[in-house]
Length: 290
Length: 277
Image (tube, rainbow over all chains, first blue to last red; front, side, top):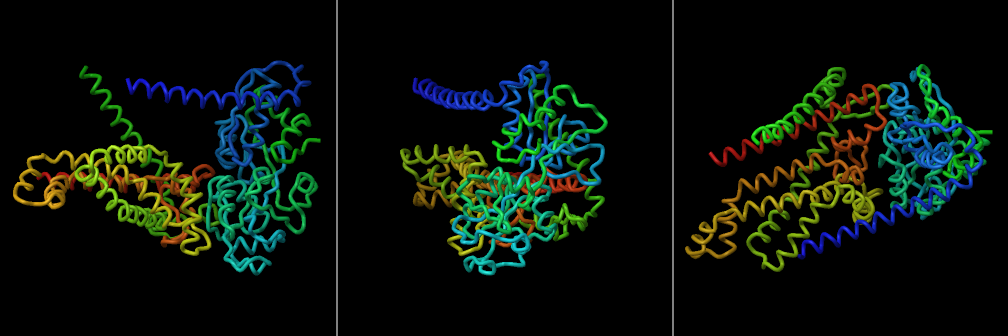
């Protein structure tokens, strides 16, 4: 009897949990989509599945785009797998996904594919809110990252050792940060995290930490302080007009030899059109469509 | 009915064979290209550099140190808890402690990692006045806690399986209860306790998720308070973005890890057989 009761109890709890989750997502989707896409449904109905795979930095943008695209083309399912820019490019080359996602530009040796820029993203330099430093130049950031500047007092901060946190080798954000600051292979990390969220949590929990993260991931996050770089605060305007220097492209990677399916083509066209601009901005990145 | 048993047994063997062969096939090319000595004893890992270096000695040493540390901390605590639960604790107290231990076993490793990252790492940083807390030390503590449940439950089962006649004889000869536990029950259960320790080693060396969040993951040569990378976390942290020789080298690391675990299993088997013989 006791067993049956406890089983029932745990079942109801699980049900309650699930019901809670379900409720949340449905209201979210309804809110997101009705405003932006009401006028675009006259295009021909397509069906099919579009698999996208790649950059974890693009997760927020892709999530928003996919959610809204359900309203534009209800018959098309777009899947997103976050595996990293390198994997996204390889996926597009090998045809294991329809659209590869890369938060960096293609390298010269990555052939057989081409890139379509959907958005730009600033890389924010973050420190702990307790840190009095609020502005650094690119040179100062590079010196902090390489360990040339080992104490915060050298850049106007407290007398404390600099703890530099970042992403693992191969990450698009790391590649972006290191190539823009000119610190490739020279960075001295105290911590190499495998996701943006972990970097933010790491910096938030250490008063002497400095790290980098996608601007879209840390905007409005008050657990960390976003530094201005050379006096310019990262924002949509400063990223788009190029005054904020630490920025990169969010790209769709398309295989040159295999044509996209109609559904995938529709998604690419829609995502790079002005219709998607507000959504991209809403996800914290900077749309490039004009 | 026999056919069903046969097929089920066969499935396990097929998977073991498949994984072994797959790892060997995909792990060997990189070792051949890098060179076995450079790979195993190289002290520098820079997989995405212009001139990449693939030395995994830091990972091997970190995994060994980390596992030894976890065993040093975890085994005495786990063993004593098992003795307590099996022989000393009043039944009512044991009925509270045992489910708690079982619950500890059921906590997903990512939760250990998360709590380690949010609580343990800052605490270690403050306690030892370090620039950052993420270190081998944190990983050892997390691993020690994670291996506790398996050590406790396996040792407890072994202790409980000791025939009561042994203990009764010891008590009848005038030994106290505690003397009986440590001189009679524990030696009689020693093979089971050894198995528990090896199980703990196996779990500690194979754990990735929890320690990836507390160890810092920088490919340094290990020292107690520096940021380190284990064999498991080396594979896990770079696999997502890896390509070419880097990816193959990660398979090779997995192969090395696999060989380590094989050695542990063989050691366990010979240990148990020798005890019985």
